[in-house]
Amino acid sequence: MRPSLLLIFSFLTLICLASYSAAQSQTIHDKPVQSDITITRDFVSGTFGQVHVRIAKPTVQTSQPPLILFHPTPYSGDYFVKYMRLMAQDRIVVAIDTPGYGDSDRPKELPSINDYATSAGAAIDAMGFGKEQIDLLGYHTGGLIAVELAATRPDTVRRLVLPGFPFFAGDDREKAYEENVKPDPVETDGSHLSKKWEFSNMAAPAGLSLERGQEHFNDSVQCYPHCWQAYHAVFSYETEKQLQKIAQPVLLITINGSLKKETETARKYISDAKLVHIPEITLGGFDLFPEKYAKLSRDFLKNREIK
Image 1: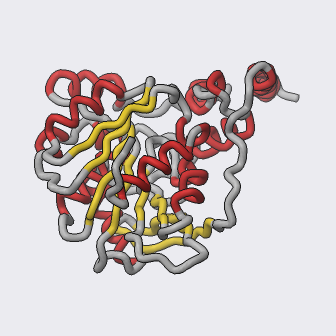
Image 2: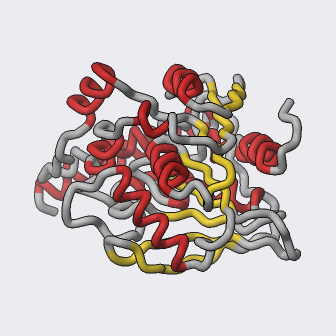
Image 3: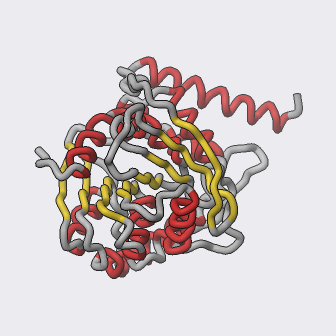
């Protein structure tokens, strides 16, 4: 075996052994969701080419509006599979891969959040949902896409759920741009993959299984070496201006983890927003506690009182 290949093999073996040991020392919470809902996959036309979507449909007839999901960077709609099966008990649920992520075609030029939202709108139209009211959930990057879509298509978007909203403005946005908008390195020894592995398994101490961490890792490297491009869109988006255009009811959800402060700040700019905190979630909420997000989402979308 050549030295470079031996180094790569040894490096990846050490990562796997370390992660396995960590997984064995904790309680695994991300068990499969018990559901009879099947998730199918398809490609539809978007403004940058083909858009990959996951679709979950209820087994009974429903009058609830479809729920469209937008994932965080650098993942895909796979991020929501457990949540989808829970929410699809009484409505159609669609997770759209952002252009350049998952299996959706990548834009040739640097995209903006408006570009992503326009592509999402085209995909929604292609699936036949553009002439009816829909609800949106967006997480991290996906939250900005949801806001832009709601601002540009107010007659179509009925309600929004925004757990973990990346509100950055002024100097904070400029600083975040400098820190995050950088080309992804590709090292000859494969060492650039270690940070992706660590990022994909951050929720391991909270109970994320090694298998699910591997799935997130697989997802996160599909966009390589262009994963940084969505961060350009996020940290060049004038969030404070667009939020003030949102007239639809919005549910903001915070956890004891990332973007708590940013999500709380976003509330000040939205005319009709409710903020709910889930203290027991620190990391990996959609894998470890999907039922909590599903209950809050369903109650809000059905205009029930949220406790």
